[in-house]
Image (cartoon, rainbow, N blue to C red; front, side, top):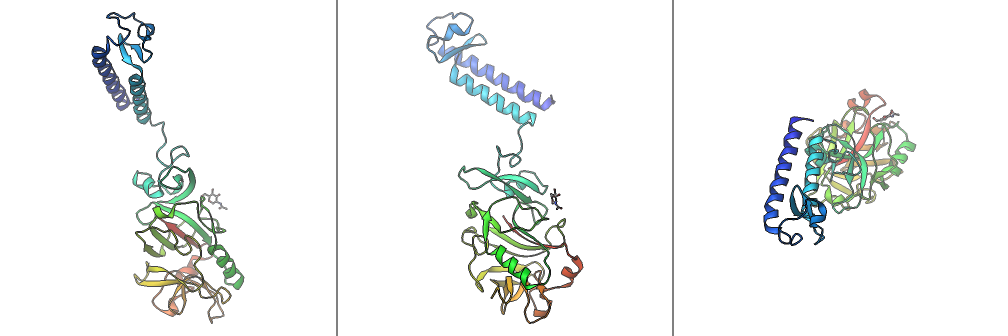
Length: 307
Ligand SMILES: *[C@@H]1O[C@H](CO)[C@@H](O)[C@H](O)[C@H]1NC(C)=O
């Protein structure tokens, strides 16, 4: 037992004794009506609500409350109780809360579905990216350059699935937000990482103070060639109105701008080569299959994080 724990237990015992002694003075006549109750529990049992404790009659409810407080402190000091988010019984409000409470390692944690107590779900919290506390709702491993694979991506990101843990080395079959109260989330990252083991290095970002309910992709698809949000590219620092692809059969899926230069997704365009892109937005010719994507090989991924 650590000295801190001992001290805490000792302090609480003192408080318990003092509280008990104080109360005994005012409640002794209520307690069985005898000035000198027998030194056992029976001595106090006449009213039903009093018990004999350490030579005094004590309100039973009060004693129970004190005992509970002692137990709580004892649990906290012993460290047996899991930290917020580390068990289903002790879920956090969000990955952000888990990060702010001192858990800085990316991994599986438990979060509540909403502010009301509606159960918890195990999710992947990304702690190593941009001040930590991000919830991963989508992950897609690198794709080849083909119309079929663009169609597959279109299929996946235009669909939402039940909230669940999303690992960095798998490809999601939907954007997993169903069941989650998106009103509690305000920030979005459409990111690109150079491997499943790397954190996001290129991304588009936006924030909505009103929450993410109804947001395109995050909370359902809004249609082709529709504005998703004004996003900031981490690469060029530009802010641009970013739209969904203009035609899945073109194919052009994911996110793009102006005349639909793709910036996160796939664009066959007029080029014979497929273009996967990673947030270059400033000119047509930097869009798609940039050096970062080429150099990363076949292990890069797209991901969506919310916070
Ligand atoms: C994916 O990542 C998880 C957790 O990091 C690991 O346990 C699993 O073995 C990985 N799977 C593959 C196919 O690499």
